[in-house]
Length: 173
Image (cartoon, rainbow, N blue to C red; front, side):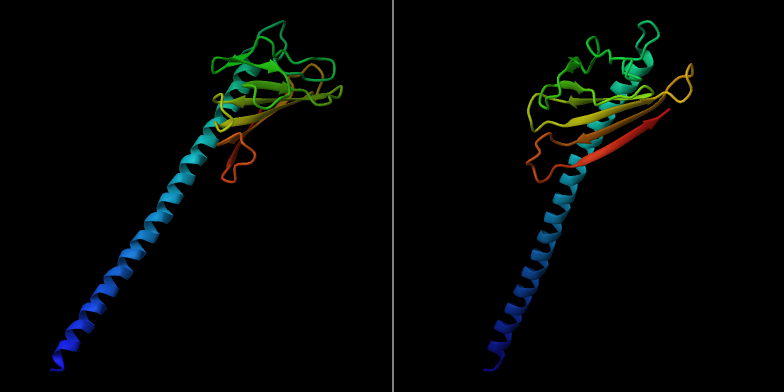
């Protein structure tokens, strides 16, 4: 007579244990999925940063027009961005984010200049992009200028996106 209650108790105990293990596995699965999504978005951001850095590096080293740089080196120079293109997109002189390739030139001095441009890897606001800063400083007149290229890639250009990630690359030479 007392053995029937033991069977029900044992069944409830085993069922509860199985449910707890199942919920723990489900929780781990959700956390791993969130982590893998973050890793994927981080990859988009680093690829955008790499694209921007490689574009700036390519044009700085390969632009050949009267031995000038594609980017301004001082207040005496202007950046030559009208004939530059990367990723089949032209670099446009316009400091407006959302245009595929835009540039803006902050104030310059007689011995240094900074050129900033945005690289978009698509046409939508949710596509990856990068903000590229090329800083050139003339250390000794007659010597090549010291250059720092900083590319900050983002997984999305949407500033309102709470899951926006940013990865940066810096090149000095």
